[in-house]
Image (cartoon, rainbow, N blue to C red; front, side, top):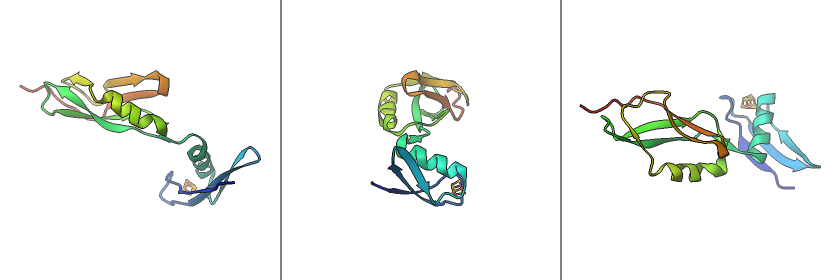
Length: 120
Ligand code: SF4
């Protein structure tokens, strides 16, 4: 049985977790609370991350707008998602919370996380 050690990032305590599969169950040691147990299980079985990146803007006062996913997506989907955004260009103005991109297949909804006004 292969054990994985990781630091829980759910809160600043940073508990050192050990997680592994045994008898069809995911075991977690070292967590001081149930949130850490859930985090350890997810990291072993279905690790996810929030995607933060930037997208090109046409006609804006800035060439890029920062974007952020509304929820974590599978870690394995991060690089393909970034590659899919490579050629995406949105028109200015862009405002915080504007929908920039969606990929329902991986549960990705990207929203703008800053304003980019139209250039004068
Ligand atoms: S296990 Fe609980 S107390 Fe420890 S870092 Fe994670 S969330 Fe915080």
